[in-house]
Image 1: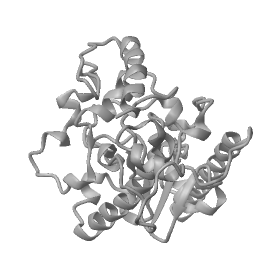
Image 2: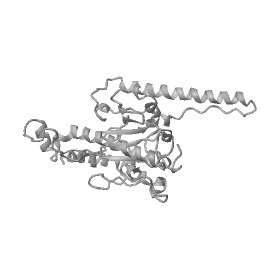
Image 3: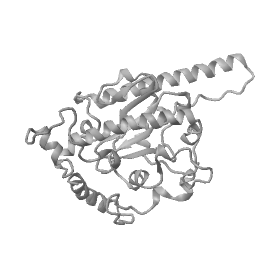
Image 4: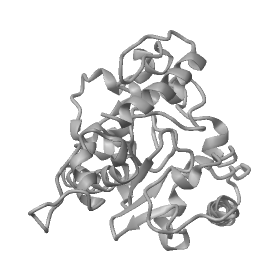
Length: 304
């Protein structure tokens, strides 16, 4: 996948790209619930599946190079490159059925929705298109109106699932969901037997979009809670990749040719001051103070 800005640094760590970073202790609670509990071996099993997929790709790549050498013996020998760990998401689109429900939320012929292995919020999901265009940079892939429309439509579907998950988890704390929770708990009569009180609009609060400089080669759309509370939220670039224009909503595409978000390196989004997503307080470069503040904001946010 071509980069929009060759000088732009990745928003995630090299260990996360390679899949070797430690997953959070509460990873089982960081995704959309599908009724399947993860066991102690789930993460190791998933990484084994991804590694197997990558090794298969390495074998394919090496086989192609050997074939080329035999066809053209005068061709100068070049050692085969190791397969790019940035291709790890391809394991999910290649064979989603091989993964447990704790990782793959749902899949169909055109898309796979998964829980992020390194969630940056209490709920963090990814939408992966199963299309040849998925190997293109999103800026180029979304020039196709049909493909863009399909991704935008499927993103709305995943947003609804994530919103329902947030309501399931935090509705009992929310003032806006008080009436709905009372009906659910049998504490209040409700005339409409087919539909509960709507309650809080969790969907409107979600962060949705692609990174202007994707760290992984397969196109993926982030759909996540705004809270930024996670063991995997570890540094400024993690945070700013979701709380600056570095995250571009799929609804904003196609981008104009002069859109500044096409050049995230020049804009300096990842190295910008750390500002609270909720109250706007500026913490400069102090990530530790921001993390402490986010924990307080999280409790307040749940009670809205």
